[in-house]
Length: 236
Image (cartoon, rainbow, N blue to C red):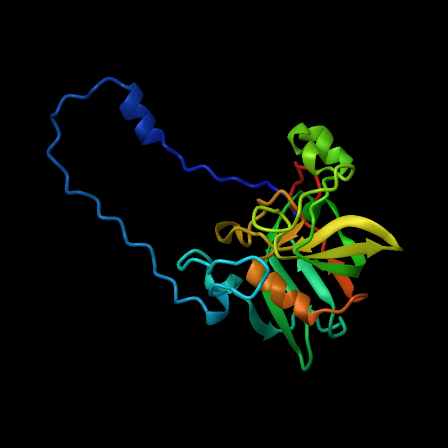
């Protein structure tokens, strides 16, 4: 559910050419620089195609955007001490693992945000919602008054396209209290695996639907501590 990291490409040559005086044409012409083409990714698995049997249509994930290591896939379980059914979120790696049987786990690419870096520990999956309402906490409204129409007092934003929780949301509780930490959909494909969301942990809608179908209420969830700096706040 939160947004953080951004990257800037340097542009010193451009700055010099734009701000400096024009140079005399005394050097011999140089051969043009030919940049290598970007590698073409393999075709996405069929399960990332358009979904048409949901209450709202979900478009296909575009090709050549999500790198293969972030695709939903079964892998060797890197958490052998956790019982099957446990969810482990690794904010720094950009992965969510669902521990399976026989030394295997289902791995999902995840976009993480400020809460994923500020909160860690053990929690319980209290409940899940399909196409959930987004109820903006008061502290978030205080920072962003334009979200007042979607406050808890005003009933929140109805589920559907444009709702930042996406197609599914998993609600995490600790000692019977809401952590305000969510695992949910609506991650833009280009941000998968990065710490750029303005929420907690975001999956592709295709993947959060799959995760929702595999988990049970009451399952254990571990959120690993992050070593990355925290500079944003806010929760969904």
